[in-house]
Length: 220
Length: 220
Image (cartoon, rainbow over all chains, first blue to last red; front, side):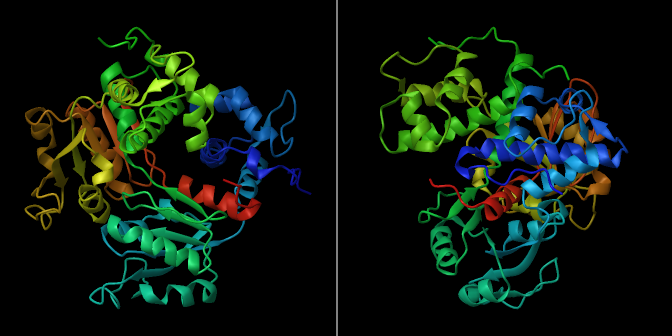
């Protein structure tokens, strides 16, 4: 029996809350690997430099799965977080634009983990079509996107083209029926209402380091 | 004259606040490009789906740079945010581990922007040393790290090696004098007190999409 609430309003959950759920999951995975059995929100916060009140507030959207005075069962909490994030199912993705970044992603276990499967690597360049990628897929013609998406039950489109091609690829993904798109191209892409597009901005990581280089490194 | 407060305690600023400053900067850059001259925290929040109270609270750590009832001057706000994040100076970085990811980063304007400069691409593999990278650098011997870091005023080390090499590279970066390290290897790396190590976890982006695939896409 799951204690998860299913009647929450998705509009009430901010993207930052969801990002924190991913971070909590990573922390809980580490605790599980260390053999820790239970953890309180205070202890979780202390070990991973998080905010305990924020943890309780974030969890409260989805149910009550801690025991007052005891804390959370680590293995259960991991399973709840995986269920909330939809990671108890496999999600299939296609990558369009087979350059260095696509090759790196295909080769990068941390990107897909256990819940995501790359089922297509597509490119418009005839010289790339037919090439084999590090994850053992053949590069296919990007023109076949509309056929591949339904055939292989693809849910997520990943754009790794150069900037000028990104919007066109995004439009083709939307026409093919994709509703969630991850954009790595260094340009803003837009889609219609009902399509969720996230752009990855790696500068955020460098900017955090620049902040600390400027103002001093905090005591850990 | 800068209105920025310089006497804040770096330990009181959370990593999430700093990440939000990067996001605010991105939003303000977009407004500046659109020719918008002033913006209130409400309007900034509405346009970019942020939290207006959070914006005001985040800014308040660093000074008072809005005008009550009018809002922020966009160009000024951009310049304050750049100064807070330390982006008014150039930060030099070396990348160790020249595979697809390093090549992609070197080629990826969104990664370095205007404030970061890649001044070295290093690898331990003799077959890679001497190769030319997309950003026009020659791959140099990773054994030369300790000499290159002070010579080229490097501040940031980027690890893009496979997981098994990451900790050794991190140790070498620390010995060379680097105090801020960005780790892309799919493994936890550790450093001594006073060294800040951030690991990039691209799964967070996919997990957010999985959340929305599971619970529905919010109305924008």
